[in-house]
Amino acid sequence: STTMTANWNTDLFGCCDDIKSCCYGFWCCPCLACTVAGMFEENRCLPLCDICSPAVLSAFGIPLFVPPAALGLRVGVRHKYGIQGSICKDIATSCVCVWCTWCQLHRELKIRKHGTHPVPVAQLPAVMVSAQPPTAGFVA
Image (cartoon, rainbow, N blue to C red):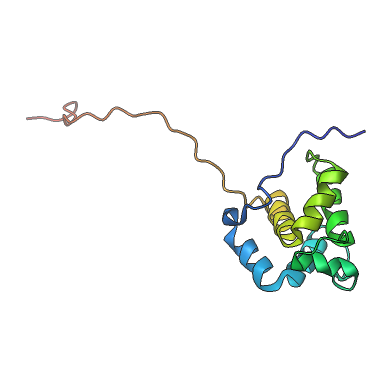
């Protein structure tokens, strides 16, 4: 059994963490979903299972059916990278905000595959600066 120790690199509603992914998802979520499937090395047409089924209602805020592709890829990403969570939480997330799910998956895969996560700059030690010009080696 795999121990889940990692967290998602960005929150479900962390669109400000990657504006490009957020805009891509907002303007063309089906295209983003196909991109995510391809990034996870699945068939790029997999999200059509969500679009061509009653699960498409989730995209319009009516969470009556679980979107199978969004759920499957979310679980797959979570297990591949050891991200904490549960199937129950994945179902709820996929049903309640499928667009946010696709955007979070896109951000996560970009970070994991391409290292595009903003890296915090380490604090450098303070350097003493003298107001006196150096005198060694100068002849007056």
